[in-house]
Image (tube, rainbow, N blue to C red; front, side, top):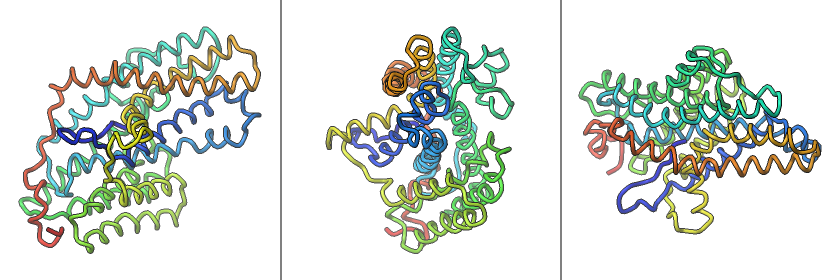
Length: 383
């Protein structure tokens, strides 16, 4: 969910579709958690039962957009031409941790405070008990899921999974480089990713016992990676077709074996990114796109802080506002708007300053020199 764009003279240019998808998915996640956890949405359900029920049961599918987009952008960052090899893989993984974890840790302390405040106004399953030191340490290390600790905030699992997926693709890039040696082929990585997403779709993703581990989600993530490589305009038609088949064949077969709406949504998002994911739009093209780009930029912050905000608003409306469907429905809208506002504040006052402060600990990833020169590959791309 990290914001992306370009630097230098084109800094006002954004990947418009990606920002649109991130902005929309972030709003759906906020509304899903409002509907899923209640209690305001429970009281307001008679006013719009079908909408609340849909958000409750299906809103979480928006996470698939984030998974595919993350894969798309990690390919753009670490292997833009699909070539194997990466220098200093441990340093690369550390760089990702430094970007993800510090704002996440701050958000977890906000969630602890929100639970403490909310517990004075209501009794509800969404309120977490005060954490012990081992639970806190597990969250700091992004290991709370695999160690079996209760998450301190809704969505905390995703940050840990994003980090695992990043570490996994970094390891695959390193492995691909070891397999390729000094050869300059673009096929090692697509084959490794296709193998990984196939194993995920046919095995891991069909068993919820694995949902705290990256392989459960690698099917969606891998589709995003392949979509970036397939959308490269410099590639020949035959190479593009082969990459699309690597995306389509395992996905269609896996869905035929065991249809999962989340995987179908991930496949649709990957296809949309293949077609339009590299489209760049000016931030100033219209006020509407400026808002979309801004919401996309702050989507990670919204994701981090929306649950503490929603928890406090839910508790306040439970304690101080009559149990009226219209008033509680207004509370849902208020919590949604407050989550976006809090996300914007968190982005400007926490995420961005932390990023600047810790920039020295997260040096840019060193991509192998040949990875930036796809034109010399034998028949793999057009020149």
